[in-house]
Image 1 (cartoon, protein in one colour):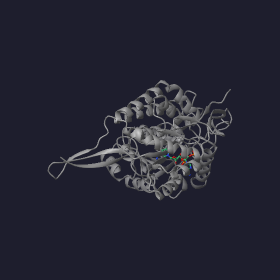
Image 2: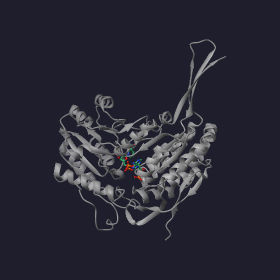
Image 3: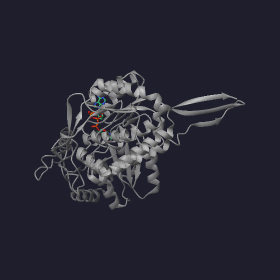
Length: 482
Ligand code: NAP
């Protein structure tokens, strides 16, 4: 069978200069999803120049007209919903229902920000001088670089592209090498929706080379990055040298606090969902369950029993709960942390191995794994693993649970399971995280609300919802004597 080829998109042209790289299905590595053009620093420079040339035309187009193109993009993706969802499962490994949920979110994100085209607000306030009219309005910041990870290969590019474009910026998108097709599908839809040439550019290829070229590209004014802390911090240093505006969304070590008064079965369900769905490869996934002593043993047992029922396999098959890790390197990282966990906390209560035999050998499948009696100083309680591994920790009481929950450098998401309203409010005010859930899984956010963390997890303004506009626009203030 012919392997489909996916070129880069620069200045409205499909560009493929030279050797490419393969995108393989992590559930079955003999399935090649596509061959992508491998961009170079020159492609990034060309893309940034094209974006700079396109900027005046796009920025001066009225915002509802920009919105009309985003609405059309959403409609195109909607018509291809089944195909785009299946593509995502093949390239990323998440289950088909999860992929459909993500593609639906992408479509909603485009419609939401298309609507912002008719709402983009400013400030109109009274002056303290007579016959002076004062107002401030939003203007675009210019050419923006967008760098995205593989774990939400469609929604994250969407929640950067859509607000950037509606505000009148032009962009260069560098998607994750492990899952570039889902982002490519959005670019294809933008192209077909009539986006003027140069407004959005797509360059796939090595993050090290392209990322460096992007922060050095002369026209660039801002970078929005989602990915690991290691790369994000490096990018921050580079971007600061040029005083680029920067937004970083990075790793987490998210807790779910389970109190003795919780709705027990719902708490089990929420913890398992947050820890293992999407193979634990969500930045908002729970990796620490901090359980009050009074129910610890019973909760641990129930957690293990519920986890035993999860089905691991190819996400295209019906009934599968957990797909593969994204690639060999990520699987090796997860297995290495499992060995560290074994040496720190003893044998896991469940899981702890790569799945093999029965068609599993061609994929990167790891069993959902639970370590019990994990304590704060252990590596598996402190470092992000980004896989299906849960550390269960014992807390004396609520105060102890809060201390443990906050004692990490990360602050992305956190959850509490309790029926005590006063504890809920204490948690809401004292938990050091940007995204909080109560009696829900720690993962599972909506596009119309601000998204992002605190502490080492994030830097800069929040993404999504109305907050996204603050990163992608600047105010111009006017004092007008009449
Ligand atoms: P990653 O390795 O940091 O890569 C993210 C992106 O950066 C990719 O496009 C990558 O390109 C690129 N990149 C690599 N080296 C670079 C460099 N030197 N300069 C500029 N860009 C570079 O992260 P990942 O493995 O894709 O994603 C997993 C991480 O993302 C986890 O830590 C997770 O917590 C985090 N995440 C955070 C959020 C959030 O909102 N807080 C959401 C999702 C994921 P290549 O793919 O070509 O290497």
